[in-house]
Amino acid sequence: MASSISLLFLSLLTLSLYTTTATTTTTLDVAAAVQTTIDSLNPTSLIQQQDDKTLPKNTSSLTFTLHPRSSVHVSHHQDYESLTLARLTRDSARVNSIITKLDFAISGVNKSEMRPEKNTMLKPEGLSTPVTSGISQGSGEYFARVGLGTPPQLYYMVIDTGSDVNWLQCQPCTECYQQTDPIFKPSASSSYTELPCSAQQCAALDITACRSNQCLYQVSYGDGSFTVGKLVTETVTFGRSGSVPKVALGCGNDNEGLFVGAAGLLALGGGSLSLPSQIKATSFSYCLVNRDSKTASTLEFNSATPPNSVTAPLLRNPRIKTYLYVGLTGISVGGRPLSIPPSIFAVDDNGRGGAIVDSGTAVTRLQTQAYNSLRDAFTKQARNLKPTTGFSLFDTCFDLSSLRRVAVPTVAFNFAGGKTLPLKPENYLIPVDSRGKFCLAFAPTDSPLSIIGNVQQQGTRVGYDMRKLVVSFTPHSC
Image (tube, rainbow, N blue to C red; front, side, top):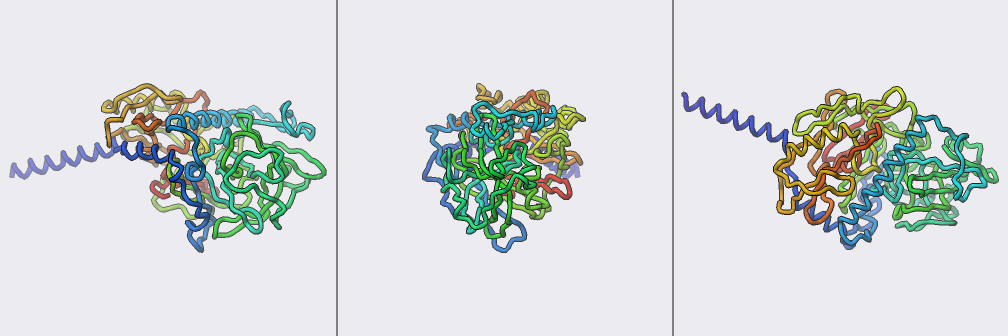
């Protein structure tokens, strides 16, 4: 009898230890992550353009294929370290743009108070240039395959949840950067229509001008990149799942900066000119594959939320319509919530603070207090990892060059309503070179705004239900 009790006790103890380990640590595949960095620089591994063949037939939703930049655009970097540095530089420029745009909105700057930049080519028409969120320095890492015009021609366009104006490069070009597809030719489309200055869509632009009764637009980015041209309407085709006519977008004749690769930008923000708003979508979702992968996923509109999703409130900031806020309340490391006041992630009465989910920002930014708490808890629990020097904006890095697999502390986001989203280890401990240096993929910010970036979103379907005001996260759903 005593022997049976001892065996039972030993079994319960073993189960307890297993359960604790399962919730406090997870396994990082170091070898696979390093191999991916090597493969990403191989131009022969680019995917073949399958256009819409990967899309299902007869779907009830409107669907685009979605590709990481590396799968359609050849990198000219000689090693993964230089590629990572370039990405982080672009990422910092984008974050600055987001914060600046929010500061404009909170401070009450309006169109009438803005003035054109001295070097703006459309200065005679009176266009001014506020800083807006977007793909500054080409930081857009994910491209949707979009059909435009009649008959439809296919284009790779950056998806951006931090923008409200759709645009693409158009002939004739005063100045156009290099893109993967031929530049859009308005005369080849029977559905192309230029909008007059009296159009409702023209009035919805932050910055606009009128020339010969043609509505002109301009969008500028934090690094000085910009797009200028006519505001038009076109038919947008969603693979084989349908099309929508008369979608307003900018037809850019002067597009300068380091956008490179994409034909333009697909805006998924909360403003009236964004694509979800214009097609009256009740919801949309996307799944971002690893940015160094050669596989594709989908961007879907009006699709049902998967039943196994982690949900959180979708919040709006009354000071700015563009950004999509989520009800983030805290972060856990090793299964234990950090001592972070929930107010750090809340929007205050002045419109400051809160947490947004952004497809274009790579690395999650946290207020310094929250970041320090996360970093300290992670390093305390990761004593089995060999620390090494920092890298660019990362101050917490490890030398894993001698390992193939390793146990690392778990990290999870906690949302209002008691829901928790555990992150996969590759969502927060990422390689920065091909020699085994990995860094904790979070960064501090002095801004009260927190941003959940696309590194933390990879491998998870992120959905926005505008009717139910819910953000959903469905792991392993690409």
